[in-house]
Length: 170
Image (cartoon, rainbow, N blue to C red; front, side, top):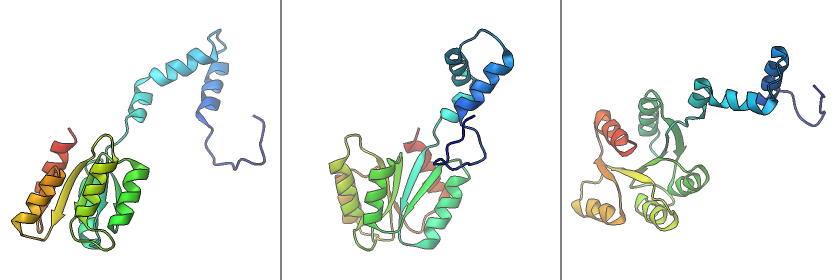
């Protein structure tokens, strides 16, 4: 293997190097391309290719974010966190999550404005669960008009949120 001084060494060989080593150890006439295809068709490679569902939590309450993060990570979801509406929009744009859990009342940009922007700018709408301590029915009606997938009032049972997440990500 030729060392390139510009590329830092990280301890693991790139996948092509591993495939090439397997091909040379076998001493067979099988081409490198077919070895790569066999490696990609293996069950292990398919498991690695399956992307975990990604959930963006947008909330400024550290305790709520941490509780939701722990619960959902334990179920195998990948969690992204934003602490205000502007960060939430930026992360949603950059990371393309499968689901957004969105607080209504946040600094810099409210959950309503984030939801409205998400609905206006995305070709394929992302699933959104709005969580709020607000008990007003007109807020729920407005969120539903903007296209929220579920609306959960705080405090809520974690089982209620998990059921909604699982239902929306089926």
